[in-house]
Image (cartoon, rainbow, N blue to C red; front, side, top):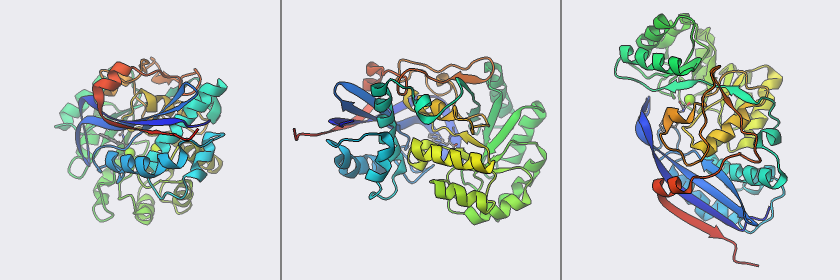
Length: 372
Ligand code: NPQ
Ligand code: MG
């Protein structure tokens, strides 16, 4: 692949309903759409950084800066034989995994289109459809939460994740558990607790949850070990796991028993597959996290989740969970058995709705190779 031109487009998409987590309430979702061009073929990638640094220190602003000043000048005009090569080419740039992952996704899409293979095939995926669940934001009351969950169950979701925060935890989860005694249920605190106050969550241990996701700070790996010792329910790490090394160390010290894999958070699909392979060899379940992706990132998540070690349902909901209109022509729909079909066309298997891209575009820049 010769990367003759790379475009970066900052998009701001309206959410169908506000999404509240322990770090705030969102009415819109930002992302960077990355388009690589080689001999008339385009590859699409999505950088999942948000406008605000609530989930991660990486934002639209920081990733825009790193892409424009460092990542794109490093790769534009160069020959890249395979997307897996990108990691080494960019290793001199510290951090900024979401920007690197966004570009890498575009290279996987381009490589798949040029070689006539789907991303699923390229990554070693086995399934044609993957089990999915829905992530439910914090609501105004436990009663309202039960209603919202019931609505998602009626739509066909068979696994539900509840967002929790201090003051809105045990009571909310108990209400949902009472209403749906056999529902596959899990919770996500997005780093909102410290070891000192996390024991208020102890009653969750009696609610037969699949897992408790990221209760403590991203950097508190050792405190997660202390907490896991005190809980029967498996802890699952999300924000803490930025690489294969982190995943290996977290499992070794017993900081968690399950890992949430997001390609954006760990620097790309190649690293995500490496974490998957390691966890599979250690018998640790993994599942595919979600970042409110557009159809571009959603297609990538579906391909990743089709690998054999993804044994728990992913946070890969149908398009209409988040967006009335998407930037891809394809919309992803929920099957009756709480699965979504994995795209099987070359690359990501999606086409852009250029009108929608224009509509949601905030800003854009191009990086071109002028040397012939
Ligand atoms: C998580 N995702 O697992 C993330 C959190 C997250 C599906 O729960 C805007 C608003 C951007 C909310 C990015 C899910 C977000 C957001 C990530 C939530 O932790
Ligand atoms: Mg999470």
